[in-house]
Length: 220
Image 1 (cartoon, rainbow, N blue to C red):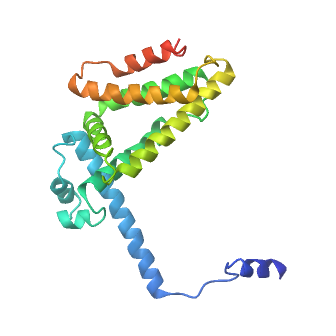
Image 2: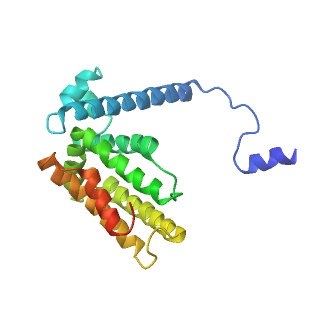
Image 3: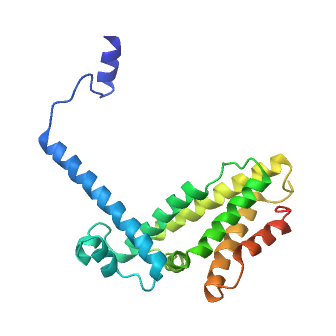
């Protein structure tokens, strides 16, 4: 009885909630809306990968998911917001498929994780074009993707700095190097290489990233 009273004081139900048809309908509509939004994002990813950002139109995406252009944008608000969420969705997929332990268990694991992700980006030029274009446009504070990219870079820098500090504690990386500054430089290298690669696809991005890591004492 005391346990039930504790839950009641916390505002938690101690028994089955009464059936609320209106609330049930709202939950059903929300679930359908969430599923449709996920379908739109996955479809947009496929179209961007196939056509590139410049030729991936809202109309083509809308047609592919059985919506009007206005109906599609209802889920996002604008084209910039739509493509920002496409980038976010791709990031979630990459975290699932290419993410490594944090902090890394070894130098080899860290280097291979970075190299695999960079190689993957060379295999999806349409998305790499989208990311480079959108991240540049989103530097403007009024852009729909500004907050997302601001947080994306902050989290990426912090996670990478943590990984560098772990490697320093393992003796794999010079302890006199500034891990925070090194993280900033690594992401500057990877994003800068992507921009150059879009102009010259013969450039070997993984090779250049590994060369940078060798300069700081990794990827031996």
